[in-house]
Amino acid sequence: MARGDMKVDTLTYVSEPTILNRKEKEAIAMTIDFTSVTDTNKVTGEKVVKAGTPVDKNGKPQKTTPFTGAVGILYRDTYESRPQGALLKKAYIHTKRAQDNSGCTYDAKLVAALVNAGCRIVFEEPGVVGTIPDAASGGGA
Image (cartoon, rainbow, N blue to C red; front, side, top):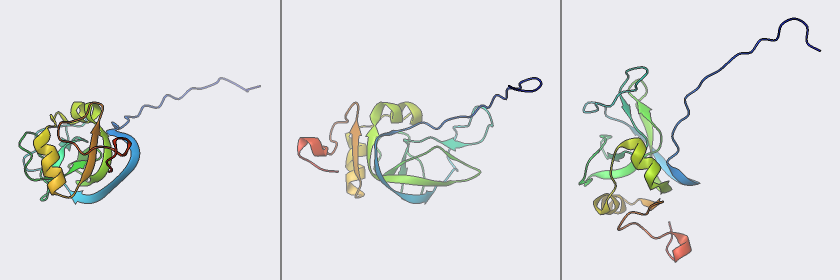
């Protein structure tokens, strides 16, 4: 039996979007270049590059096709105050969630750029034209 009044604390937190469709992944560290970034966090006003955004070898986000210099897909939302991010090199990405979060539209040119950069990324739900087949269909990631 409790003594006195019961107090309730309410905690709020912001969960990060999940762009992965399966937990298996490989990523590399990358410092993101915020010089051309215009997207901001609605609460803090801080510049942000959203998870699912293709990034080139110099750390510059690429929001539109052709994604000729893309070397990976940003794994988590990355903020200007801490520009260290992780680029997915091998992963199964949930296409709809990643596109909705990043504001990008994936296409065959992105897939070609990622393959040329040595990435083994599979876009699932829905698939992207030109993507690497997954292990279930005889391919491998």
